[in-house]
Length: 187
Image (tube, rainbow, N blue to C red):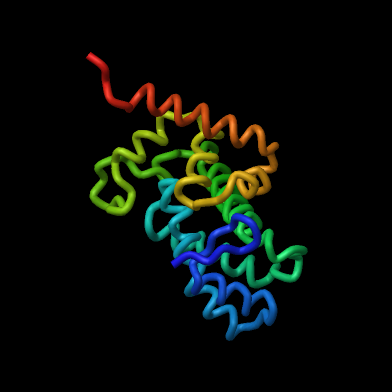
């Protein structure tokens, strides 16, 4: 069941209740309920970007700890989802930077799963990974934010700090690109 917050933001009812409690009374008790409701979305964010299960779990923990510590900096409760995904994006970028310093270059194999790998999450079909691989990095981020994280266009613009029109155009262009490459073939 979805719950509409404000004009267009959708959260599941349990997530909204847990979020409201946590934002109004941040503390260990409300955070536990909030964590159980929201951590699966954060975990999915990392898995959709090709992180192995163990890495996605570790990064999810980092995000949730950062949220607990920084919730007081959130100015508007309505901006929570974009803020959460911005924190997740920053945690992933920090991980990649640390990894790059350790090996001088980032090896995508440590973060990205190859299609057909036995450890791949069955919820991430090989076809989806192939579609995303055919897009440029910025297009991939926008499409995953829209169709995996289910962010609204204005939330994507806020998370990625780009104009709303750019988000709209990139989604339109990416759909056309995917349809041309993977759509039904005419004879």
